[in-house]
Image 1 (cartoon, helix red, strand yellow):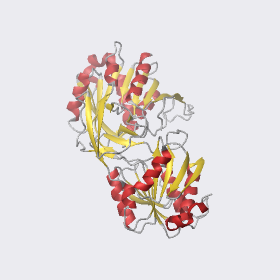
Image 2 (cartoon, each protein chain N blue to C red):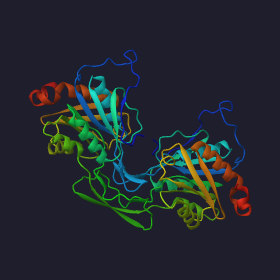
Image 3 (cartoon, each protein chain N blue to C red):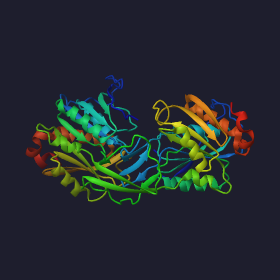
Image 4 (cartoon, rainbow over the protein chains, first blue to last red):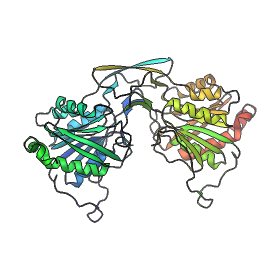
Length: 251
Length: 251
């Protein structure tokens, strides 16, 4: 598990001959920043609040972006995944740490920001220094809002092409459309996590991609394949051409 | 991750020649039941409250008990560990599921019960069917007590030799002594988790074992070695002889 704040480039000891996939060129010269995994919000030194997230989708997207030639920074909550080759990983635990790491990463020229992390919306108002003793039959925990990372990136004066994820259990498309507009995102990937055969710990996923003027559905496929298809899609339409090209490229 | 309720015997394809350690005989004919790992208490389909616990200590104890000849049932919360060879594992997620699985396992002749799991003391009073939307700056979560698994086992009319763990961040020995008496345990293993070089995700641990009339300290060593030493210790003194033998075996 990576939980502390560490930055390292994961070489993976790749040589051109070992690389199974041909290295793409679509994202050469671009800096892609991604978030992945859950965050953990401490109640005390032993207890925390967290979300279900294996990090698989974010790690697969980071790998696909690197394979397409991008410089990739992956800000990751605690997961049990190896860092993909050629990706710089920053390990964080809480949403506040993730926010700080993202803001630092996007300040240095960022072209595309993809927020896949399942960030805890709330954290305990206070964190106990010592393990809380269970003296009562009931306990009340006051939670306060965490910073909204993807909205903060999308609010930057020179914002990168900003892609959000909406992992929902009901009314997925409508919620995703609302989030797209409310947070000023360029694109949102809608994911129905009530279907246990996709999402979370599954190796497959099925998503719909939405933007201001359109929608494109990606049928169920392995997360690694979906990641390549999504990176291809984002690289092709890109933020600057999204409005102009509109539906035409999205068959 | 194992999260659903499954029971399986993990053969590990061991043959006598592959087995590195000679199989012990101290626990032949005994049934040892253990708990390991964290529990997860759902707030809604995507959020949960949990505890830090890698499960390493419990899995190492299960392996050591099987190597000493015992029939071993391991009730495990969600962890990223392979089931040790020859151990029957029951995967659970919440404290209530762990309680149910333990009560079912100890009803069929159980000689030794070892509770290493970091069970969540509290669970949300109500679990939302759908993902909770973040409409407010503050959120209040009402928690209610979970069943106390090790105390419930120790309260059984024909209780097994019951060993608890006390993972504490402060005043460790005093708290462990209180827990030993309050819960009617036969033995408690006290673990100072404020020291990051031991406990939780570490591969090493240093513990003190306490019982009604004595204490024995196990200095820092790998968790696998500590597990073998603890199983040896428990097998030697055993519940029936604990009072009589007292300090003499505990140099």
